[in-house]
Length: 127
Image 1: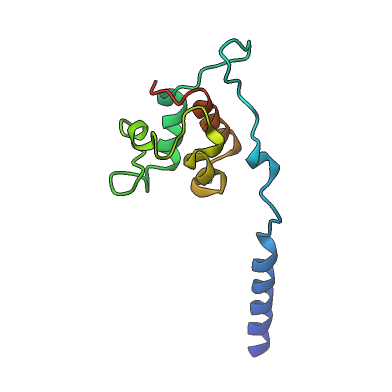
Image 2 (image 1 turned 180 degrees about the vertical axis):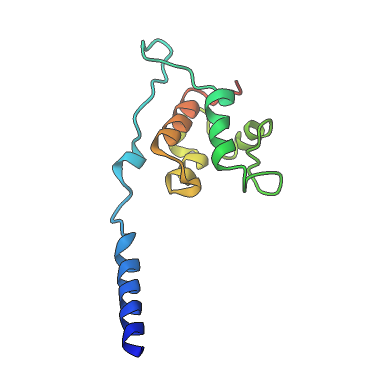
C-alpha cells in the first residue's frame, strides 16, 4: 500500500509540474487577428457593443462581474462600468480590460479577445 501511494504521489506531482508549463505568453494571445479600425478600409466592419461585445460579457463574465463586483458587466451597466477605468478608447493595448483577459482571466477565446480589441480600437462606442 505504501509503495502504491508513493507511485501515485510521484506520478501526480510529475503530471502537475509538466502539464501547464509556458515559457512565454503564446503569440496568438498577444496578437490576435487584426480587425480593421479604419472606416475607409474595404474590410471594415463596425464592432457594436450591443451585438458583439455584450454577448461575450453575458456568456463569460457576469457570473462574477455583476452588481457585487467591479466592473459590473451586466447588460445596461457594462459601458459605464468600463469607461474610462478599464477601457482607453482607441488604445486596446494599454486598456486594463485587454491586459486582464489576455492573461487568461475569464477564459475568453482568441476571437473574443480580438473582438474586444477591435471594439476598443474603433473607439469603444456605446452602440
